[in-house]
Image (cartoon, protein in one colour):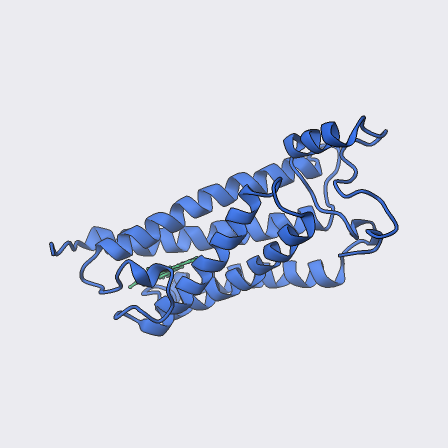
Length: 220
Ligand code: HEM
């Protein structure tokens, strides 16, 4: 086996880890805005939803680089398996294991969103709830494994990210407007496809992706 190590791999792991965490903070916060039906005429809900989706792709790209540089760097014996199977890393077993749990959860959320048009709305929604757990485990992983995360600016960034998402979570669970109940947001493309399946649009074409039956009313 070829040993590959360089300070640049380590710098990249640290930098991309922090950038991924900041981006996931934005992604979760924007997701909360979408779920709580925030959006006006200047920046509409579907623009916020598109930003949420696009930023999630950028965040996952940084996360993949973070993981690749970790695995490539033979100075830290993590191994490819430890990326998805918790507690298999020889380096910082628990901290990297919690990172693997975060990655698994984020992967489940991401893949289910790619398949959103093919799976039941309710199933997608249950899987999407995992993003709260994914974010929480990512923050714990960042604090436990980071070189920069225990003091100075690194600690400030991690605490600030955690505080933003904690506020978003509180607002999501306690401040949710009643009119959000029973609906999920879809992209304009997905809404158009579902509209073409369900017949002509109503006067508010983007108002709801879930049929308004008595069965669905009030569900969350
Ligand atoms: C959602 C998933 C993840 C996020 C958001 C994330 C983010 C972070 C952050 C912010 C740091 C701290 C950087 C620093 O301050 O030095 C870090 C460190 C680290 N992460 Fe992750 N990470 C994730 C998943 C993973 C996975 C799956 C692995 C396994 C290969 C991993 C391996 C590492 C290692 C080895 C370190 C320590 C780097 C060092 O020695 O400073 N991470 N991660």
